[in-house]
Image (cartoon, rainbow, N blue to C red; front, side):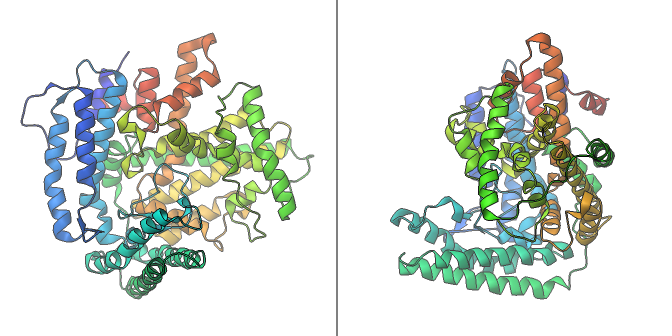
Length: 542
C-alpha cells in the first residue's frame, strides 16, 4: 500500500507559518474526534443576543485564535493509524484551511451581501447548502405544515435573528467587488419571496410568528434596496486570483490540479462533449426527435415511471444495491409540471426523465446520511466549506455517463445525446468559474461564454439559471469545476479498482465500498479505496 507519498502531499498543504512548536506524540483517533468537536464549536461564530457575530473585531479574534487549532492538529502523530483514520485527520485539516482561506481571501462577511441570506424555501441536493452563508439558516422546506408548536417556535427563533443580522451586514460589508453586490440582489429577493410564501402558509400559527415573518421580510426588502443602491458604485473584480485559487484547490478542496491544469481539462471535456454529441447525432439521424413533455398528465405518467425503470435497470445489471428507502428518496424529488419557459435542466428532464434520475444520486447520498449515518463522527454530518463536492457533484456527473456506457439509454438513442449536452454545460460553466476567479471575465461575460457553448441554445441568457450558477461559483471557488474534476478523479478510482480486482470486480460491490467511504473529497476516496497515490500528486511533489 503506497500511502506515504499521499501523506507527504497532504501534510505539505498547510496554511502559512503554522508549524508545530512541540514534537509530535502518539495520539488516538478518539483524541482527533475530540479536537474535531472542539474545532467545530470554535468555527461557529459567537452569538450575541441570538445573532451570529461577524463584526470586524469578532472575525479578527477568530483569525488570531485559528493558528492554535492548526498547531494542535499538526502535532498529532498518526503513526499506526488506519487509512480511514488518517483520512479523517486530513478532513479536519482541510476544514481548518477553509476557515483560514475565508479570513485571508474570501471574507464573505465583509465582501458578499448574499452571505447574509439565511432563509431558504427549497432543499439543497447537497449535504450542506452550496456556497458561503451566515450561520443560523432557516430551512423552511424541512418542516411539515401546518407547523407544530415546537416547529413554530424553532422557525420563529430563526426569523427573529434576521433583522438584526441584516443590520449587522450593513456595518460589516465594506467590500468593493461589483459582481458580488450586483448579483446578491437576486438572492435577497428570493429570500423575500420565500418569506411571502411562508406568510400565506401560516393562517393559524401564533401571531408572534406571523409578526416575525413580516419583520424579516421588511428587513430583507430594505437590505436588498440598500445593496442595490450601492452596487453601481463598486469598481473591483470579485475573483480570488489564480494564486489563491491554486491554494484553495490544494489545501481545502484537496484537488491535485492547478488552475491552469483545470483550464486544460475543462477545455478537453468541452470539446469531447461537443464532438461526441455530433457523432451521436449522426448515429441517430433516422431516429425521431424527442419532444418535451407538454402537459401535467404526461409529466405525472412519465416521471412516475422513470424511477422504477431506472431502479430496475440498476438491479437487472447488478450496478447498485437498492436500499428499502432508495425509491422513495428519488420519488420525493420529482417536482411538478411547469408549462414554461423551460430552463436548461428542464429541457433535458422533459425529454427523458430517466436521464436526470442518474444525476439524482445526490438524493441517494442524502438518504444514506439520513437512514444509514456513517459510524465515524467526523464523516457523519456535512463537511464544512463544501469540500465534499468533488465526491458528490463529481460522482453524480460521472454516473450519468457511466449509465450511458452501461447501456441504460440504448433503447432511446436520442437520450444518449442528452448526456453529452449535460457534460458540455458542466464544462462550459466551469470555464466561466475559472475565468471569473482569474479576473479575466466578469460574471456577465462568464454567463455569455457559458450560454454560447451549451448545445442547442438550451442555456439561455433570457433565463435565470446561467447567472445564478456563475454567481454561486464566484462565491465558492472550485464549485463550478467540481462536477467535471470530481468526475475525472472518480473515473480513476473505478479504473484502479477494476485493475486491482480483475475478474473479481463487481460494479455493485464497488459502489457499496464507494458509498461506505462517505462524503469526503475525491482524492481521499481514492486513497481509502485503492491505497494508492495519484500520479498527478506524485508529480507535484517532485
